[in-house]
Image (cartoon, rainbow, N blue to C red; front, side, top):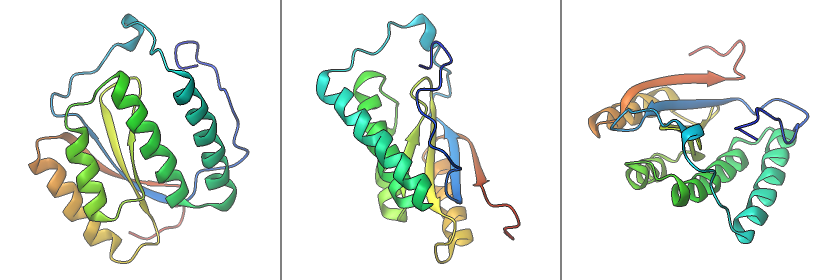
Length: 154
C-alpha cells in the first residue's frame, strides 16, 4: 500500500489524544525503500497484520492510546525482521521503563516514535526525561508532538 499510495483501511475516526516523542535513528540516514525489494511477509505475519489492523480500529473507536501502542509495537517488531532499525532494542527498553503505550517505527524509513497517553500522570516531566534519554543514546532530531490534543495546555 505504501508503494502505491493506497489507503487499505479507513478506521472511521481520529487517533486517540496522545503524546508522541518522535526521532530519527542514530545514523539518521533515510531509507529509500522504493529502491529495495518489497518485504516478503510470511502467512503468519500477514495474519498478524490483520489482527493489528483490528486492534487499531478498536483503539480509534475506544480512543485508547494503550491499544494503539500495543498495535504499533507489534507492527514495529514485524518490521524489524524485514528492515532492521539500528537501536530498536534500546528504544523498546527505554519505552518499557518509561511506561510508554508503545513504540512506533516508519516501516519505510528510519523514524521512531514513543507513544504516551496524553492524560498520564506527570507526563510533561516524563516526556522531558525520556526525550533527554533518547538524545543521550545518540538518536537525532528528537521532538515532542501532541496528537489530537486541541485545547490541551502543555
